[in-house]
Length: 383
Image 1 (tube, rainbow, N blue to C red):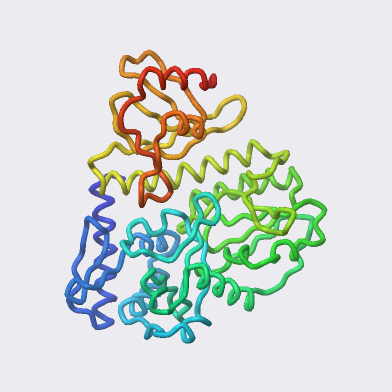
Image 2 (image 1 turned 135 degrees about the vertical axis):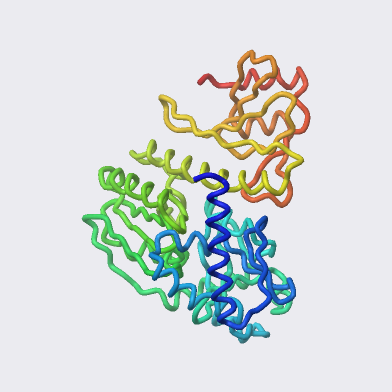
């Protein structure tokens, strides 16, 4: 699809949203093509369309029409927001979203990083929509983000059904709408208790916001699951993560790549696929909104010892580097490059994360001095 076709498709979607907004009583909607958003109420209110647009990818035209008929009125005439902590407290829920989920949203949502490239967001559970309050609400409620997210988890735990999952195959749970299914992993001991009869440590997958897959950690079953999950993740309208998640000794859910398994190659591949997708989405957004700096891509390299990610620091280029397994230092005279483990390169060069960028990127600034390059060469690894 060309950029022209993509722009036309987005504009046509905005026109459909206009129709539903007019039916809901909004008569001053204006399309903001640059932000892919609709502004109304004198420009003070805005609906960002990227996530709505993505959620229609797997719906038929009729399903899309029915869904927008329900969701748009709830967005433009939302339920009265609770004013006090006592009123909002029982409505709070935690949701899992990719790190780039709110890239196009200028609001400062209440969130905390949970797993690599997966965040926990605070949500208010209304009958027809999920609302994400911004941090200004915390002051009004008189609580901290940590307190609000703790209450959200407690509320979810109270309504999450206990289960006893079979230990001889892959269990797949799906829902029709993007709700709190993936957040079940946040309920204390839910995964541990639901798989108490497993002979192998449990592994859970959340390829999208509507799917939860649980697998006994048998290597053959895991291989089958990784292949299926990556395909689902790549084609999902609301992708979340292709990584597997297991439990540590205390029952806490952790990424599978934090422990050693017979499926290490597949675990590393899933980690690289997720990093590539998230940094790819961020790369596109940053190029549109931060033209003053070169936004470096994350490269995924398959080597004999597995899959690795690489960020390239080019001589003479002030770049924003994604976090990778290695930094490749490439000279202007094309005399080859050296590859240094990322954390080692950061320690030697002193580069730091850019403020306000999530997932993080590091600003390179000047090309390293000769003495620093010598230290980097000593720390380099062979590809």
